[in-house]
Length: 170
Image 1 (cartoon, rainbow, N blue to C red):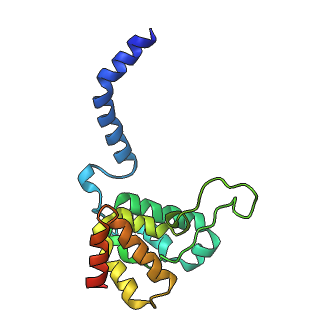
Image 2: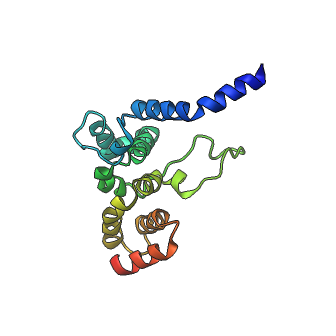
Image 3: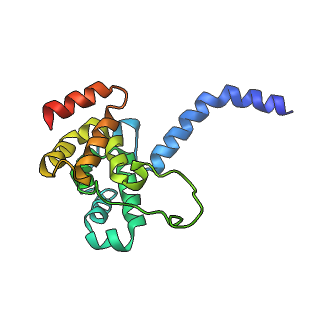
């Protein structure tokens, strides 16, 4: 019986994968794969997320909510939010378990500074916002370091392009 179930799952898998992708896209507010990256800052889904990012008080009182808004915009590939996300390159997230003897996961730059990961997910459309950060801040500042890290993440498959871009643009 188990083999027949496995065989039928294998036959249906491509169709199942397509259905799951469409269902996930619908749940995330993406009507189709082409919708990724296209977002209107005034839309009912995106406007509240942008308001969360811009709320300085909320960044201190409810960093989890701010982190979730950042992650959601990155997942959506919302290029229109790149400037708002770039303004949060120094927003530092601390996990509840930090400071205890338990280490639940390694903390990498995108975990500590979620805007770096969100901007990397947006990709090349976020480069102008990152260049603005690099040009507006001292070279040794956290904002600049995180902006450079993000540019390198965007070009991670071609590090030479990252170096060239940073040398010629920023």
